[in-house]
Length: 314
Length: 261
Ligand SMILES: Nc1ncnc2c1ncn2[C@@H]1O[C@H](COP(=O)(O)OP(=O)(O)OP(=O)(O)O)[C@@H](O)[C@H]1O
Ligand SMILES: [Mg+2]
Image 1 (tube, chains in turn green, orange):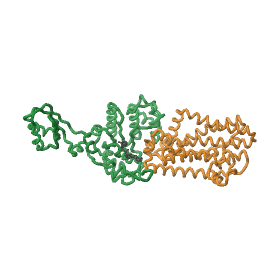
Image 2 (cartoon, helix red, strand yellow; image 1 turned 180 degrees about the vertical axis):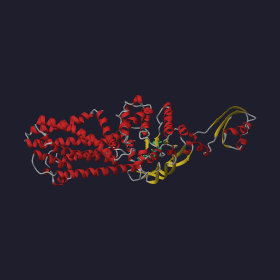
Image 3 (cartoon, chains in turn orange, cyan; image 1 turned 90 degrees about the horizontal axis):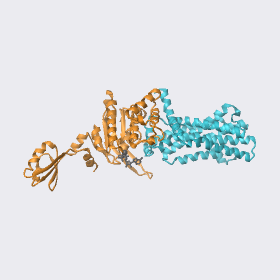
Image 4 (spheres, chains in turn brown, purple; image 1 turned 135 degrees about the vertical axis):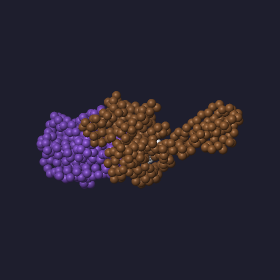
């Protein structure tokens, strides 16, 4: 487990993916993607629809091949050691799909067999995953009869069958209600912490990325436009905290702009929104400038990844 | 990896096909209804035309061969078709498996189904048309069936290759392959009656040789079983190599992803 924590789970450099249309026109889906992911991390891929998240995950998991670039997964060259890599990774796809008429248990058995599990080890692994993902009550239900949340859970259970060192989760909580989403996120956390598994996940849901991910890459039109920890992303984009002040009377807005640590200002009648570097430190100076006015309301809002997303997707 | 683990990677596809067919009402049609229709229609035709004994065996052997071929080939094709229909193809190809695991696993189940159909047809044709399939002993039957199953595997592989190369709906083109085989490999008439060009084609199809061999037991004549075996093995190996290449190509072109959307 400790050994897994060292090194890189993914090392990619110069990855390009193009698709040729029927008439020979090619479109670039991924353009020169280079990134390293530390083993043991939960790594998030963010980006608007069509930015290439699923494509990148598919390339990392050796499901499809890039046209250019070098890729190493868990220290193994992705061109030469595909089968060895496939033994130690797994994936839970967006919109999980499995053979419809197989039950939860039968599906797990089938995929367990594909991974070469047999005998009591196969039965035990299937049972363990059914327990771990609380699928016991539904183990004899056919896939086609499951709710979206259960399908997602089956997909996560399937991704754990071969005891992988690295798993790829493509939008693991899309389409789930808030309650089930929270549960799923806890499951991902638990997999990561208890089993020491590296996770690469894509999501559209910013609080999820903020909650789970050690690092985030932001994709736009097939390129990485930002790559950092959630904390640094917010800082570097100068998405400071927002202090919203509502007041009656006169305020010296011109002097407000001169204050150190003020990044921006949006004023309407009787209300001003001030973007600052560090909320608490600027607060005192700001309030002094409202000495002649009566403050009726004041609120401090921390920036979240939602703001980062909107900023980067522009 | 232990041999049991390796074996299970083959058996995985057989397991999947088995459960899906068990739950599918149309399996009854595939296993009983259509085979019976084809056997009875040919058998009754021979009565109506007052065909003599050796010709009855000629036609019944053809009808049974074609039926078993179709049952077994569809099982091999199902290994990818089921994945395609349920959009779960990504989950199969993320696993550390090779094309031969899929093909031979599915073929195993195809052989099982083929044998069930064969036994039913043998019983019925013996009872209704007085034709004893086992007249030449057990070895010819086994050789004949082995040839048909090898042929079925090659057709099933062709279906898989066309799906991976041309995407959904391409399977229709591949199904026509068994139509072509019906036409030229001497199922209901000797190959000699074909025009020369089609005759050349007929001798490129292993099934022609296996039919010739098996019929030689009831209507003595020359046969070229060794050629049939060589050709069947050649197509099977070629098919597996091409299937591997088709999978690699589908990974490069991204068809593999589109098949699961
Ligand atoms: N097999 C394919 N052939 C051609 N184009 C494709 C193929 N697969 C994906 N694309 C295109 O590649 C681009 C990136 O798609 P991808 O699915 O990776 O985006 P994404 O970031 O996962 O989007 P979403 O958030 O909607 O899931 C899209 O414009 C898509 O239309
Ligand atoms: Mg996607």
